Length: 371
Ligand code: NAP
Image (cartoon, rainbow, N blue to C red; front, side):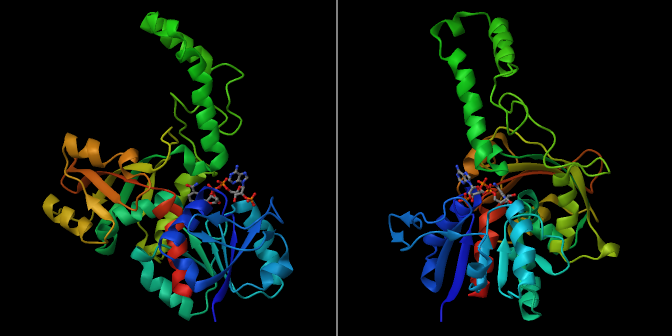
């Protein structure tokens, strides 16, 4: 009998990418899909050109309806998980919970899923009765896929990173705000007279416009266009942002590493105005001096999505930017070179679509393991 799978948060950025991938892979043929909403209860189920789901959206807060499901897959976000998950489990529901939100990732009863890296642990977890499977933080998953070969061969002593994270990583409200910011500025830029002014005058006027109190910034809190934000998520007590804290803690949990084997991963997470796709720059201290050709071989042989990009300007501009990766499952890694600090220090740059491998794809693949 087909498993009953409930979809929550399917209208958001991660949820809609998940549905698109499931349609492409024909996953819906193998399950009975039930759609929920927190805001549009009673509206029609989603409809696509090649597939439609009869019926109407159910209430995502109705515990009795949720209890009828074998599997719940939620991309709704933290508030929903915090509100519903404990009540549902306390009610005796023992189905599988698959979630994109961060809340349950570090729970001892849950596993962070990224099967090209931790397939073995996922299979073991299913066998041992784990029922809660959570997608990793987007930058963590993308980093681990890019550097998978070095992790697998246990060649990394530590990683220092700088991230360049797309506006869409924060959700649909933020992407709309980024576009509104562009529109606000465009009112000045689209005037014919603007470009007749001296460049310093234009620069001053643009700065004044983005600093204007009416500039749209309710979500980002400050302008993102022509700017960047070197803080993502909440404060930790040690000076890290929560996004930075996730890099080391989630990496080690995905690898199932205990305290004595931990890989150190630390750096700065930065929001930039890329539309989609997160980029990351790494300094990696290797455990031993390995030839660069061998490193490239280890990286490219690890999984079928990673691609080593030759370290030259043309390849970098064509294949190692958010725009060249958007909407694909590719994980290019380039700018690979040994740093002048010493032969064990490797520099690398990677880009990945944070809505695909960074969010929806690990959840979709987890669902497939269960059905
Ligand atoms: P989102 O785009 O803000 O969507 C979340 C929910 O907001 C939707 O399911 C929808 O729920 C509601 N919503 C309200 N107005 C909407 C509108 N105009 N368009 C679409 N949805 C609207 O959030 P998200 O980026 O998908 O993130 C969901 C979860 O995944 C979060 O926990 C996030 O941290 C995590 N995550 C996100 C990313 C990313 O790149 N964005 C990556 C990894 C993990 P109703 O239909 O019930 O109203």
